[in-house]
Every structure is written in structure tokens, then in C-alpha cells.
Amino acid sequence: MWIYNGKDISNISDFPENTYGFVYKLTHIPSGKSYIGRKNLIHQRKAKLTKKDLAMYEGQSGRKPTYKVIRKESDWKDYYGSNKIIAELLEKEPKENFKREILDLAFNKKILTYLETKYLFIYQVLEKPEEFFNNNILGKFYTIDFDS
Image (cartoon, rainbow, N blue to C red; front, side, top):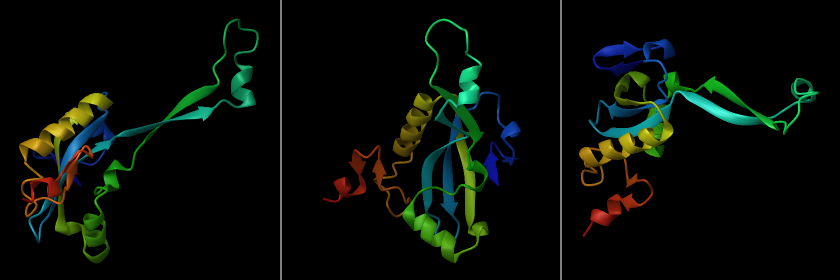
């Protein structure tokens, strides 16, 4: 179960219309350590058009498309992050040991990346390795950069 603004979120219809994804904070309750990340609600992929699909464009002038965009709901309901340490903890411990909070919503990919980065800096995840599982921001800034 995800929590957003004090409310339980369990269905995609619980989000405002056109929500692209969200920034979340996952907390391991026994240790108090957290992880901040982002998750898309919808996955999009390109698929090559089949002969049946191409038949719809028969007789039309101009350039015909070669692919279609397939959209489907992501695994956001069961998602606990991509962090390896968290994955190891999930293998050993029950999911009840984790609290999943949605910090913010985004309505496009670029803003989702911006919001994730913003929260990573606000929470100072690299400067507080005792509080956060995150060890890098955008693959450019690392926890080890602060060891001096």
C-alpha cells in the first residue's frame, strides 16, 4: 500500500488524471533508513505494426507508420525500489517492515526526473549515508565524493 497526503493509494484511478509517475520515499522501519526514488505509472513501448495493422492504411496516400505505441500499467503497486540492499532485505523480511510514501506526482517524464533529483538534494541523501540507502544522484554525484 502506498500513502499519499495521508491517504492510501491502491488503484491507478486514485491518482489525478494524466499522472505520469511519482517520487517516493521507502522506509525500512526496523533500521529507520530510507530510499528515495521514482516510478512511472504507465509503461510505453513501440511495437512493429503487423500485416493486419498495416491493412488499415491500405489505399491512403502518404507515408505509412511502421510502429504503434503500446501503453500498459506498470508494476507500481508491488514496487519497492531498485536498490540492491532493499532487494536483499525484502528476501529476508516481511513487506510490513517497509513504509511506502508518495512525496510528489509528476505529469511528464522530464518533471519526474526533476522532482526526484530535487528531493534527493532536499533530503541530502549523499551526505547522510546513515539515514539513506541512496548512494548516487543521476549517476554523477556519489556518497563516496563526501568521504574526505
